[in-house]
Image (cartoon, rainbow, N blue to C red; front, side, top):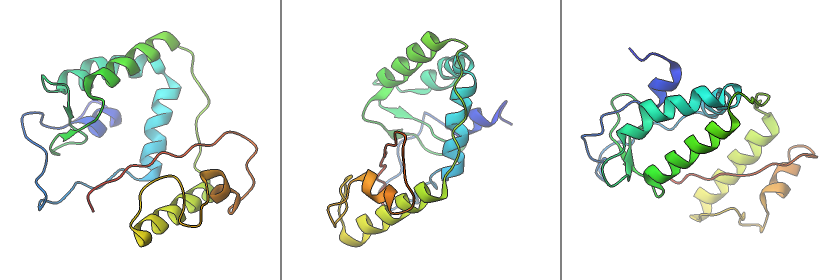
Length: 159
C-alpha cells in the first residue's frame, strides 16, 4: 500500500503507454480531492518538494513527457514534462517551511465551474470565454460576490 495519500494520488506504472482512443480513461480527481492535494502543498511545501523529488520526478520517461497519475493507471503525456516538475520542486524548496492557510471549497465557485463545463460541452467549445461572452469573474458573480482574486484552470479530456 502507498505510504501516504499523496503517494497514491501519483502512483502508476511508467513502463506502459498512454491509453488508446478506445480504451477507458481513468476517472478524474474530484474537486474535493484536488483541494486536498493543493492543501498538502500549502501545509508543508518542503515535504511536498521532497515527495515530488523522490516519488514523481523519477517516474518521468527519458524524454520527460509521461507521468503516472494514480495506482494502476497508465502514464499520460504532459505538455511541460519533467521541466515543470523540477520547477515546482525549486519553487517549493524556496518556500521551505513557510506554509499557507488551507483552501476551502465554495459552493458558488463549484456551481460557476459546473455551469461553464456544461456550456462548453453543449456548444462544443473550449476556453475561458462562455458562449454568452462571459469571463470567469462574471460567471463567479452569478453565484456570489467575489472580493478576492480568483482564477480558472481548465483541463480537457477525451470524453
